[in-house]
Length: 115
Image (tube, rainbow, N blue to C red; front, side):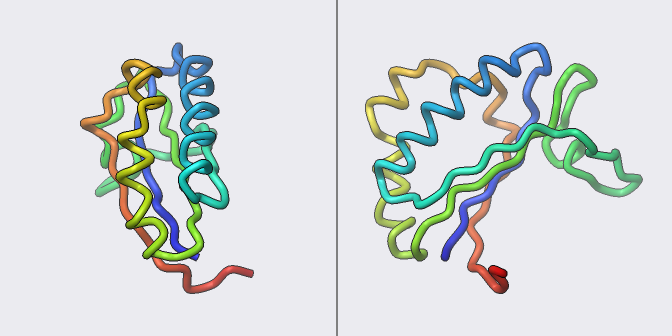
């Protein structure tokens, strides 16, 4: 398994818009080979003294931290299909993201434990 993960800050008032965006994005990622898509709305995201999720994405007081990931069978499948998913015309048809994508952080991870 290979995982592409992200953290972002979403205006709390736009939770419904974000959910609608996530549902459509999940469909697109899965049509391009992702085996699972998970989106999470922050509930307990403490502000750290040195670093934290909120600091990492420069969250504002009126924003909620979100995180999520797409699971792929392996890195090769992710690499071969992520660009295709992101350039899928259905993404453009969704319009602007309901959050500031410039403050989103993301990365790819190899699984060490999957129990």
